Image (cartoon, rainbow, N blue to C red; front, top):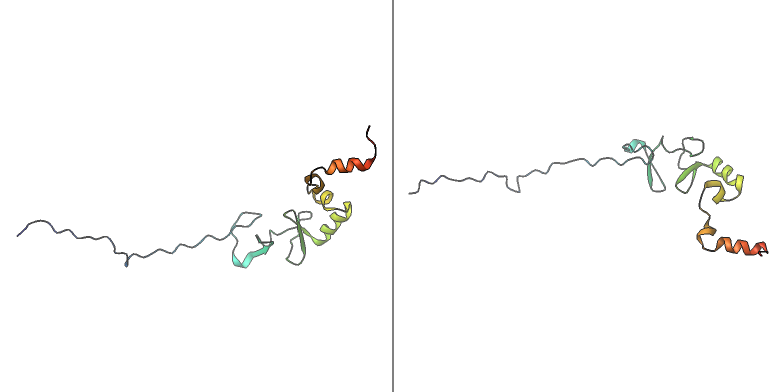
Length: 119
């Protein structure tokens, strides 16, 4: 007969361990960086906004999915998009986009050759 103390394992067995459910945090609005819940959610161009944060860059009017145009990750109401384009007649000058001719390499040289004179 042994007088050794009996050791009982009291750690929970894998079957009895409860996994605690933790909610996933809601996604953040691209403009205000606050949580966006289903009732106030608007997705435009794959980006998430509050309905009230989705505004025209030019006039700050609240936009809807049917009343906006987007360029260079900036959103505009359709009247201002048309107005800004009409002022300069191109996207480069109207919306501050880099001139694609310069990105092509040699765009200015080609333009200089057309000037006809150089020396």
